[in-house]
Image (tube, rainbow, N blue to C red; front, side):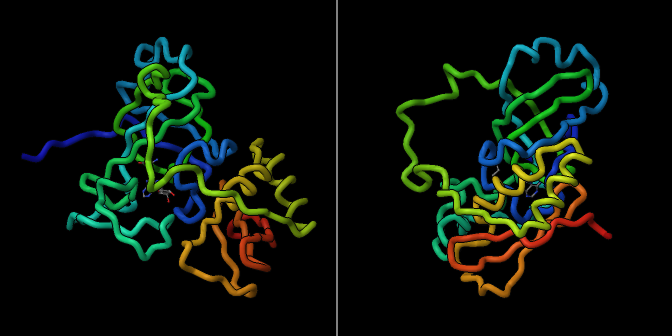
Length: 232
Ligand code: SAM
């Protein structure tokens, strides 16, 4: 029996493309965004009390990965993209009903707006519900997951001097920790694990309104080459 759900708001996020978004929340604390709530939830009553909460769960739609045909097995990029697992053993975006969940830091609460950090959500993501994080219930000291035991190891990120200066200037213009955002996202090594990049191959993505370009001068090391205004 089908049910229908309606977004309660949409996220305005630093991430304008899927590529280089961290695979889970909190891996890039400098990843910020605003959840803009829709009527009737844009009123002060709907968020009353939320200022007493440091983190929230967001339930959202992977709106850029919705598929008609359900998959039973998926290939998580973290496992090299060549190992299949049952969809329910993964946090893949390709899943029945396309529902994602992320626990994120709540920086500020305003009527109609929640200011968030540590997000892993694409710009424009429809949010279905918000729930306060409850430490005594949601933090499980005994929990184990042998597939994803710990956060992926961060790789070193170096900068061309001009790229670093440009990132700092754009960060100041935007009022955002752009240099940290770039370092934190690239340190996750966004490239699928099965790709062995040649040093001349360039990768890129868009964060806020800037294009970031980088390459792998040697395996396991990233160098940021350019940070430019998108469309310039
Ligand atoms: N924390 C969530 C979860 O466990 O349900 C998301 C995990 S999923 C592996 C994270 C990836 O989802 C990000 O790297 C990004 O590429 C992708 N993503 C984020 N927002 C999306 C959206 N609205 N539509 C499609 N893909 C999205």
